[in-house]
Image (cartoon, rainbow over all chains, first blue to last red; front, top):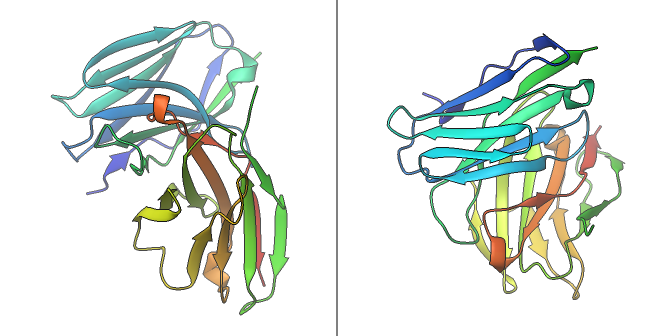
Length: 113
Length: 114
């Protein structure tokens, strides 16, 4: 079983739609959860990170963690064509520096005008 | 806004040659990382580095790889004898100890081994 799984997509939505992106994971030691956005042939850009279970909101983005189900989500409200990118979830087990991130394979999102 | 920079953006090399990929982390950051992403695959951790020594490394980071912080600003990844399967995007990342869950990535170096 892969440690972190994401549906690769592509996920195609019309502009203005609410987007839901998800990851599942198998390692119960993961405590910190991040979402990165990656444009083609660019570096990952950190969008949000959350600790343990619960929700976190930042503008149009909401990150949700359900540790009991080993399931995390990123919601994008009022999606824009500029949101078209690959979204990567990443996670780490410990709250100290030096921790490696384990990434999902990414979901490609296309927002059509 | 400060950012991680990487050079070169694209490196082409012959199999068996040595390459050095360079990174300039954000200036007040103290922990540094290298990741790689083979085309169409996941971003994979290679190594983390703090206080002039390796903190953690993955199975990928074998004896062909080494890292160095040669001065106060640069952080390098050396591959001693490149193989075809080393072709990938290599990303440098850094964190500040004040926000060590926030890894900031550079734009990457695309390495092509022929």
